[in-house]
Structures are given as structure tokens and as C-alpha cells.
Image (cartoon, rainbow, N blue to C red; front, side, top):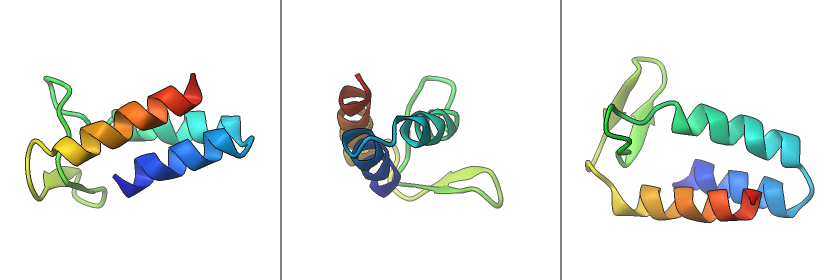
Length: 68
């Protein structure tokens, strides 16, 4: 969720390239049916915490809206 918030803030503060790059990294960790968990362990490449996590999806939608 916090990473999507960062995408949103990058987009709204004129850092569009940073926003797009981070958004691409974040959506790449979705599972095969495009769901997200509460957290992602980048070191081990796996989802952690509650799954699926509604707040992560809400933050993704807000970030996508900010990019558009």
C-alpha cells in the first residue's frame, strides 16, 4: 500500500518517470489472477500477510488514477 502511495505522490509532484517506473515494478508482483497481498518479500519473491488485501488494491487504483 505504501509503495502505491509513493507512486501517487511521484505522479502528483511532477515526477512522472519515477511514478511509472515504480508502478511497473509493483504491478509485476501480482499473482496469476492479478491479486496482491498485504506485503511482498522482494528478497524471496513471495507474498506475505493478508491475501488478498483490499487496501493494496485500493492504493493501486488511486496510483493508476494519479498516473492518468
